Image 1: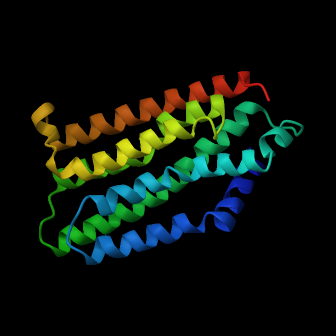
Image 2: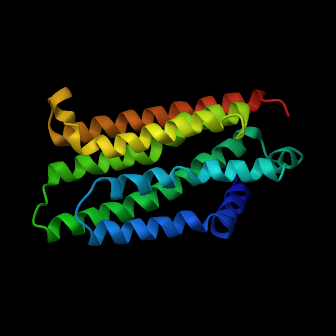
Length: 207
């Protein structure tokens, strides 16, 4: 699987530079402009789109069929995309978590509870789009799964715009730390279930 991950990383830095450029632009805006959650949430959503773009490239170049003639299992092919997603999500989350801390500390509005709650939201934003999209794409392919993928993206972007108006603790009367833990645990559980479901679907897919 190491070879599959290396191949995907090469493709990202060769063909997916627009994602990296957009992340840099949003980072600059997030640091220099007035605080807006959208500037932090959208790049995290964007990082979750990278493996989906890789799947589209693979199918366009018939790599998915060619890889089946090589000593890779279908489970490894699925796992490589999930691992790539984890890598870029982790990097993006770390960068924007640092940016958020700089922004709030400089603005003298830093609150540990609110900070970690929002980091949990960023974590969920980076994971949930691929979580719901991967199983459909691995079952039907990138082209047929594109409509569902756009619906998920649209929903995620709408959520990021509405986020400032949502008082999560009015629905879940727990501490900020407890809310962050619940969000992270639920996200990890959903991602794990998505991973297993994608392996099942892709193992049974006919080419």
